[in-house]
Length: 103
Ligand code: TYC
Image 1 (tube, rainbow, N blue to C red):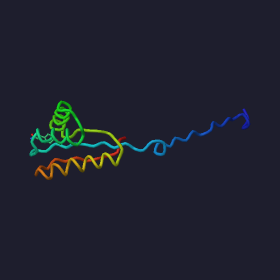
Image 2 (cartoon, rainbow, N blue to C red):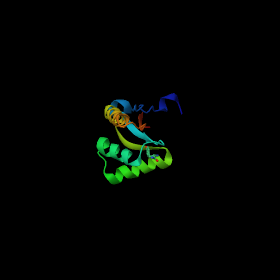
Image 3 (cartoon, rainbow, N blue to C red):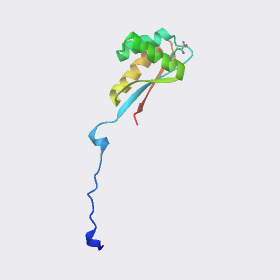
Image 4 (cartoon, rainbow, N blue to C red):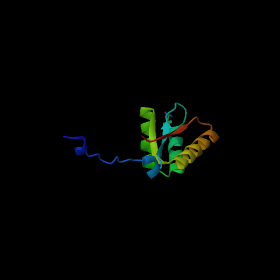
């Protein structure tokens, strides 16, 4: 076989970061001080979750230390996390939310 027989396949370039913007997780962290009912109230008010879903996610964070609440665009994730922490701070609770890019 000579060099001329070699076929070069075109390199397919994937640019996912240009095709779709990265999604971000909003993560809820457990603590020992915030009442369960208040966590559910915040989840309902800020993330528009039902009582049932709020309860389930609160319990997941309580049991496992943290829980993903929603995956969405970066600016929405950051706004929601801030809103939720502002509400908690106003009420005097140390409830923590964070955002991080999805894998
Ligand atoms: N661990 C808290 C308690 O027992 C309740 C709680 C649950 C707090 C979830 C934060 O993300 C949280 N009062």
